[in-house]
View 1 (cartoon, one colour):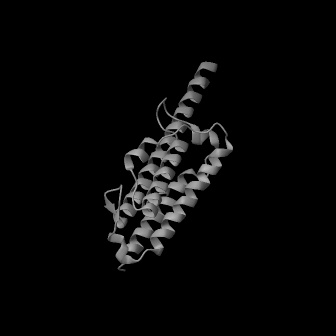
View 2 (cartoon, helix red, strand yellow):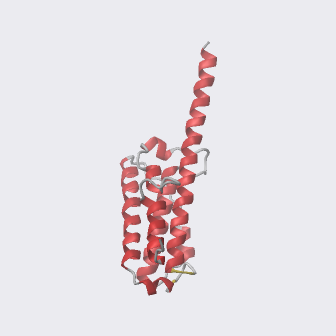
View 3 (cartoon, rainbow, N blue to C red):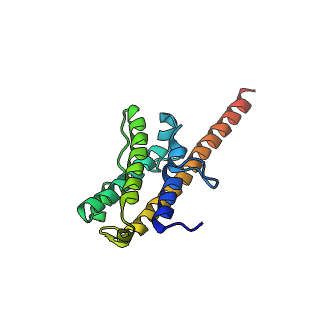
Length: 172
């Protein structure tokens, strides 16, 4: 089956961002949807990102793409300086940030779906790429971070199991 470029980009955004049941990998949203706040906040070491921090990072850049589309450009250096902000102390904010990830992902896909095929070659100022290339980068960014989060969770579980085994040996 031959797909139009826009349809292929939309399929990529869905599979990487908020899709269900990809035969190859979990989407970013699938990777975080069932996390409790402790899992989301866990970091392997000081200064290393947690799943929650990654979600906020992805949302930040998706908003940046939409800003660039709306305002015909974005100062990427200024936008990058505002990235990786501190996590809120309010645990309920985790659910809000996770929901915002789903919302902004849907909005970006809707924007792409509504775009005329010919507009896909237009530049997204501040990203040094066309709309099509930017959509591709958003999808690969989501896939990268979905894998990163899944590895973070496996590391967390492995460290907890090792600590439990060590505690069991010490109790005997």
